Image (cartoon, rainbow, N blue to C red; front, top):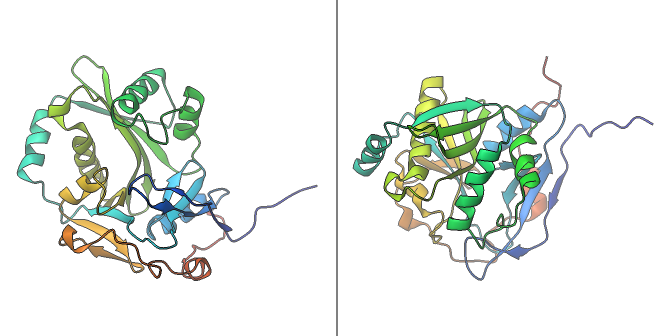
Amino acid sequence: MRHSLPLAPQFYVTAPQPCPYLDGRMERKLFTALQGENAGRLNDSLSQQGFRRSQNVLYRPSCTDCASCLSARINVATFKPSKSQKRTLRRNADISRRATSPWATEAQYDLFRHYLDSRHADGGMADMDVFEFAAMIEETPVRSRVIEYTDTDDTLIGTCLTDVLADGLSMVYSFYSPDMPRNSLGTYVILDHIAIAREAGLPYVYLGYWVPGSQKMGYKANFSGLEIYTGGKWKKLHNPDDYSPDTHPLSAEPIAEQVANIALPDSRPAR
């Protein structure tokens, strides 16, 4: 018997679980499968509406009484590096970059494990084995690249899994050597993606979620030209202190309304 995929994506909600960003909160996600010939257009469209990709899934926070997680992107045209970011670029002038197909390597996994053990030993990825890591890198139905960064000895010191969208680059996941704190490699990888997007004529670099009140995610507000997705629109982030992580029972729309307000791309296969 032949089975066909549904023409329109089906949306689901995860069960509540402890929030990884704000203590004492419970998180819930709205998600849909990313599959079929229309996957690229769906990834483009939903990324522009605050969704993120994880392997073959697109998701967006949909918590019952909290709306603190705000999708963030850098407007390349309005971005200007700060003095500290210019120093970061100078410190890393000897780093080399290479872009490859999404294929996992032992060197990547070794760096990934070192990064997690040093920075996120109690995080949700702490127990990820080499097979799960390979799936994270390789299971992508859209146009993705692995951007690797090496030092003068050709040692891998940074990696970013990056999706190429119609309007920008989406930094799906990045990790780097924790042994070079003065180099601010996390900041450098973002700065380099801004340079890549500018060279390619792409207007945005998508960073994932900015969460006011979360020390883990606060660094994103250090980049000028930052825009956040709130109220169904992208808006320039002016003063980060204007946003509060306070909860409220009316913070989020009902799931049915959220799904009804999602704009879907043309479902006809690309030619």
